[in-house]
Length: 176
Image 1 (cartoon, one colour):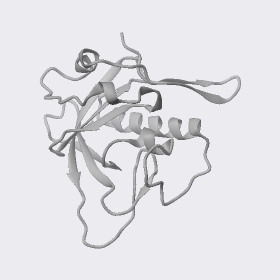
Image 2 (image 1 turned 180 degrees about the vertical axis):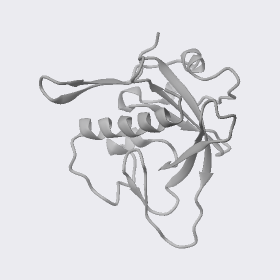
Image 3 (image 1 turned 90 degrees about the vertical axis):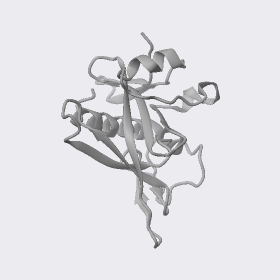
Image 4 (image 1 turned 135 degrees about the vertical axis):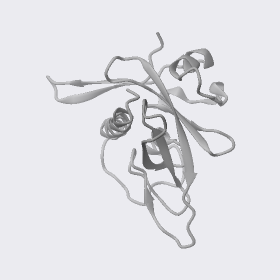
């Protein structure tokens, strides 16, 4: 069984212990998605795995996104397909990612929607997220431009916040 990003809350020292994401291949990733999902995979050899808390990527057409993360409930790798909608605007505005809290100028975010499992497409839950699903790289300042709202939180707290927000979203849609 592949291990992805893992972390644990050490109650004795009251801190979050962070482990890095293991390298995954296409076969391991394919098993975490449903059989009827049409999944496109990026070049996995070009990914900096040590900088990821979850694996997120966008289809070249721009209409789908994919997330693979470790379930906090059973420790298994889970994958979800998201519908992606651009949020065009004529005026300059700032948007904040709901996972990493990175503040983008116009065009840096997109609306990602997950259809609730078992609802037969009747119920979906959306979030405004970084348009390229590279939240893990943004909190480590690996991508430019930097956030328009600077934070003084340490890295482990930012990672904990991303995973908390992601797992809550996936729990609400019954994927984990």
